[in-house]
Image 1 (cartoon, rainbow, N blue to C red):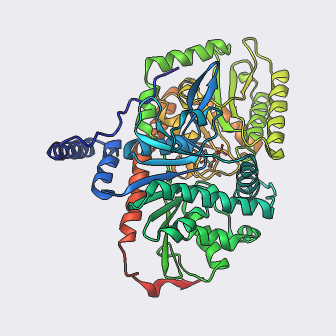
Image 2: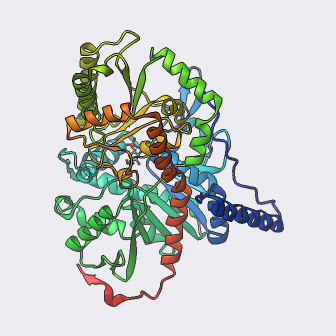
Length: 542
Ligand code: F6P
């Protein structure tokens, strides 16, 4: 297994303040030098500096359903994995830089054995930089809050994938209870101290309201990592009013793209009595103002690039090639949770079409699909798994390859560190979601391609496509078009590949997770200072 990222944890409190000042100044100087010398790169140190100046005595608390690290039974002992989900990998970089507490559901089968009496465990387990506070959910809580309301109702409601949401009152009530429990855990962590609470995603839409009831002074931001539907779709949610009221207890709500922020404002205008300003991206209701911002999330690009450049990573990539019989073959890669929004069958069907229309790729191209088992309690997820397996078998039967299967379907939950060699060895990465808030696989892949030898086939229905315009953009609804995109990506000259990946990569290196975090946290700060409310006259009734 590869070493973890190479950054060091945040400096200790024993550092003399003058030394800190000197450090800060030299970092600022280095940054400005770098700015003058080439494209600016915001670094982890910049985020640390931001926190020193702005957070001061405030506690920083991240809250998400999924935990960044899980402890699991491994043989007779206990080990840990770094969960590979885009959100947890990205936010982990922020939490490492800022320290503080991360509250999340403890879902690993050895999680309970590794916490202390306060349900705390230091993370990352090999280089502690922050505290993970685990929350325990009973089976029924998990079934109704996570599988039922979060993933059986809100997930299909927010994604255009033509899966009908299921609305059950008992799921909603449990969702409310679990959100209250998350809020209580945060309040325990915060005590009487001032704090900035950073909630994540659709699992926690009501948590801000419960926090606000007990601690009106807290600064609260929530980032909605999935799309927000248009108001015509949103209005079918039986609890739409309560969900919006929960969200509007935050000071700031973040979305990846402007269209989702606009959809949110339109949904508020259509549902609540509130003043909604599309110009200022704000909602005013019951004397409170919530700012809405579109801030596309990114990845810890430099760290992923450094990991990708390690000789161990190249060796691991080489091992994967020989173990899977891929030597001398071009290799495509897909990395997704087995989710119906990710367009995995559509991708395989397009590959099959490419083998039909461009026979020169038969036996010369193979595809690895890493499919992380996900939400299998829900039948739509089991069905997408079956469809994917059937298609992989069909392609392998129709287009055999001497060295091994043409499609390698790896159904496994890989540690992020084990994923990077796949990124680096692939000649092409396919991100073909039917609909996706951002999709960080696209950005991780580019960050992990330091040799500039790669190609990205990208769905226009991902948030990432707004920034990564030079990818091979191909619709998962257009099999012929996507087959041609695969062919074009594989046929491109080495020079043109280099030039394209350089440009795409630059976007990911320049707009990295630290930019996102600073911009978001800075918005909470600076917008919060704008009292009394300005330009009230500009706020229009919904
Ligand atoms: O895409 C939304 C999201 O919350 C991601 O941020 C995250 O990677 C994924 O869904 C989590 O899925 P789960 O926790 O259900 O495995």
